[in-house]
Image (tube, rainbow, N blue to C red; front, side, top):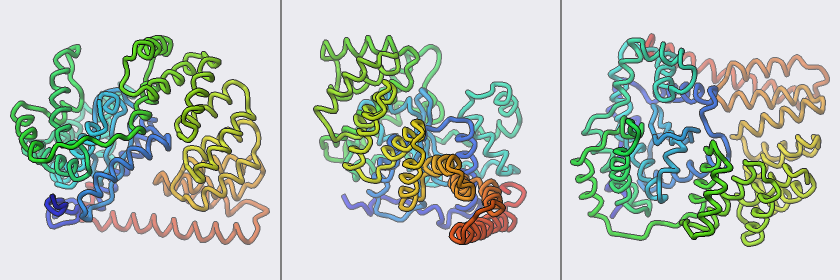
Length: 472
């Protein structure tokens, strides 16, 4: 099947006669900012890289130019996924754990991509009138993540604005069927099992009957009917049956999330030990990996160390194993072994973000600040998108007394988090610091000018918007 058979309208097409792509992007950015501030996002580079690559792989199958997408993980055990204005797609960690194959996970991501490309988000959002950007973002975030401050959440949702916005989160039956159709096409063209979408939705529907008076959030905002499942099954049958791709990283991601969400690590240790002993597992390496992490979380460091060392001995080039081994060695008090593991891992994977940030964190913890600073300075010269790297670099520079460099790195940290005012504040602080050489003075001046211009452009754009008063 030709990839061109998928009709994916660009978000800047003629249908965008009400809310512009720039306005959508600003709304999405504001919501992401609020979710990050609340601690709802998973920021681990290994996990975020995985979900980004999965999303981009699905998008590449369309072979069409679409607005840039941003895929992110939400630290929440509930089964849910959602699309925000501006191409921001969130996947709850609980949904990943509920999936049985990577094709099932890809099915949900493809479905959410379709909601954006078919402009369901923009069209439904446009129904919310007389709403400005800050309030809209706050309401959407409160509705999607109502597990923070209950008083604040209740107050927001009780308002008339929240009531009208809630309606915009629910898609029509036509929207859902169209998202299924386009999503199934994306799945097939990306090499996944097209049948995984109706199968996953059907299983969620069946299993929800056994939940304690509740259903997964995903089924609430994406209602699944017998008719819809039947229709998606018929569409999926039009594609050839092919074995789904075997991505071991999917299994390791699930292994880490399983331990991350465990509230009773000792019970998890016992269950995983029994599973391994009786052969109850889909992937033995992933189950052993979960077991090692669960042992660490339960405080059984000696056993955890033994288990992870066995895994590394069998598969010495797997990044998840190497990261866990170095971390467990550090927890065990063997700093030199931990640093040695990081060095060997970075020889295999030079510039890997997860390994680099872990290594830098370990160096800072061990008071090896100069080495951490050198490592991070080199990393940020080639990787300009990691705000965590700039945060660590700012700490290292500050400890070494390099105040202008520390402020400059802190400014980049805020800039990458879309906190332009705070970035400007840090750059102005850097300008005022003494003992600046010409190199830092010119860098700070140039950066300050650029960020100010960007902020001014953004403010001008908002003021000139035809929706002024609603989105500025």
